Length: 339
Image 1 (cartoon, one colour):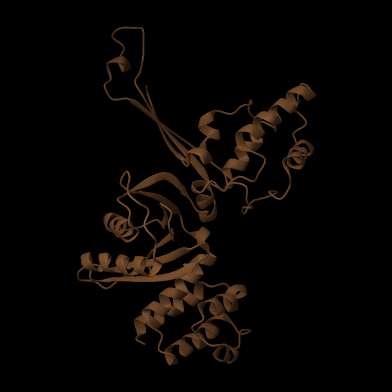
Image 2 (cartoon, rainbow, N blue to C red):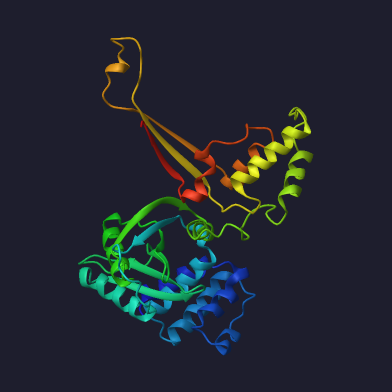
């Protein structure tokens, strides 16, 4: 094992929190139980990492072994990445083929290496017939950069692919080509949907809203959550009457449902409109370019925050469809233009 690989393994292990160290190493399944028992996990992190790297050297770890460890770490800390969603499609009338995961992996690697010699591709099968793919890009003259990989999560026999943001934008078309051909699709497009919360993106595109997400008080039913809002509500906010209160709750439930919302951090709206005026000779009226405006709503949990606005008396009910349609449309980037 050369110094470059040893350094890569060292940096990867250093990222792992001490509380997760044993769990991640066991999931990696590269070092045996007997080898792990020889390591003192109560010592400081630096000497612990040194001991683990020595064990990896003894077992002659490869780049793919190290890449697999990096995939496992990323699976544990997927919220540290920003994920984009791509949707693939077949030709009209095209039959659905039987999917073979091993054939998909083989085809995917061949397509990438046919176009780019220096690339490292690693796979790890996961739950729900999904596969995690780690791609370290190089160039025709440089070895793959193991510290800036792109991660891809593909659910077999579905048209959806989730990718971490790729710093090398020039490689995105090649990645899309490899995914479409290997999965027997015809076309791939990037959706206007992005978040750090991969599980929530998956729930949005697969219409799986009624499941538990990583969020505050989502375990409570809607009635209890509304009651909690009332208890902590600013005393200056006064509800006119019980009928109005019930109407607001009914309208809110119709718009958002009574289940926990998928977790998104923002929604962005780009407005383009021509200036309209009844006065001739107005400077802006002669402007050919449209007026542009960008509005961004952000919150640690945007959809739950929007859902709470009307019951809290902060906004009128119902909210604008542009705010309530986010999960149904599978978008948090919007472009609004004149009709």
